[in-house]
Length: 116
Image (cartoon, rainbow, N blue to C red; front, top):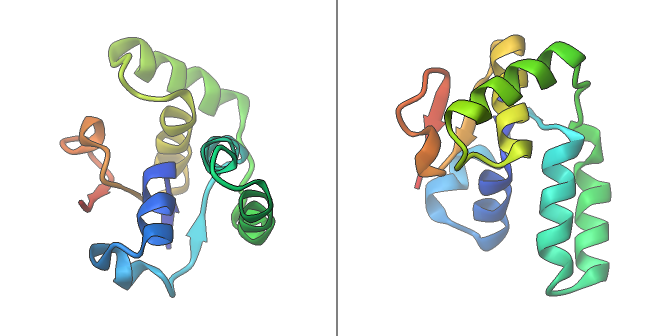
């Protein structure tokens, strides 16, 4: 099982071959990552963005208040992290699953599967 951040979703949607091995695994994410994904995709095509987010809705896990607090502490230390990705990283750590991303801000953090 992996936690997909928004970067990972985009790479899979684009067909990045480095992410091919992650298309048939158990995936989790948060509502914040889906919101970020939906917003970015809607700039191109609304119907596709909405249908994709509906498809990925089954991947959603609960975000707890402690996740928010820890994520904002993390973001204070690294302002380049998006709020959705900081929350996602914190949730992944709590659930003890790898955080899948190619976002360079996460490259050296623990519990990260970094794929470009």
